[in-house]
Image (cartoon, rainbow, N blue to C red; front, side, top):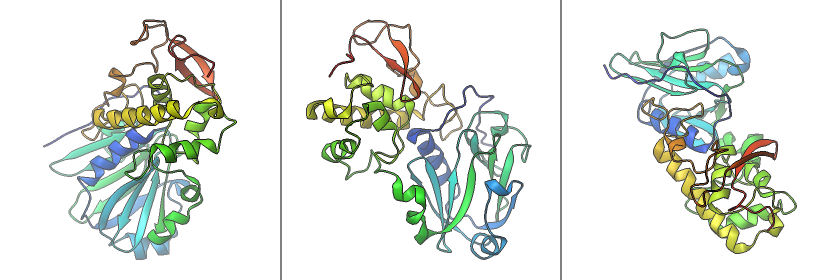
Length: 304
């Protein structure tokens, strides 16, 4: 039996793009082509779907594709309906079959223990006997069934910005999107999901350090050259984090059920009181845009 999973987790925080991407990657290897034989749920707010639509468009449907948009998972079905899944703080997706087990998400014992358990909110039974569990301790996450054609019209989807790793997303597009928040500090602009999709606290700090930009500087005071460097750094840290399976000290594990290793390579995030790897100055922690923020006072001057 192939078995994957991790033991109890560490910190409660929202997933960022790389963490959700590792969940998507893992599921796409396991459930595409599977037929949903039945579905069970215990928390109406976590599965707010009409029994009629579930019976007609979910039960008996086959999984066509697993996608991600920003921090949201999308499971497309052959009935032209999609499951839209938001893991929020403590969500997990756990797959179980006779010869294979997979767990990704908030790393507690539910990833490796007997399921269903007290955190299980939704169970999908596939026709081959395998199961997919949506677990969520805090009950903030949800699984919603939508006509696939309507997914782009969901309020969140209409507002969310472009994917920072999209093939067609350029440094010019990046600067243009940020200019919409020209009187906002750069960190708040990066965290704004209507400006750019999927960027959270970890990778905002990491990319700003890479570009030598202080997070409190207003967007309008940053040169085009600096913004271009920031674009390059943001894509670099996101791609590295996906490669490493997400952030070690965060709540998400990689597609093999192991904690991600990105934090082993972090240059500034959660490294307060340690030397900056670029200049040796002691890294400081402050609060910017309502979030704990890590900077090097030498590399990232608070003036443009």
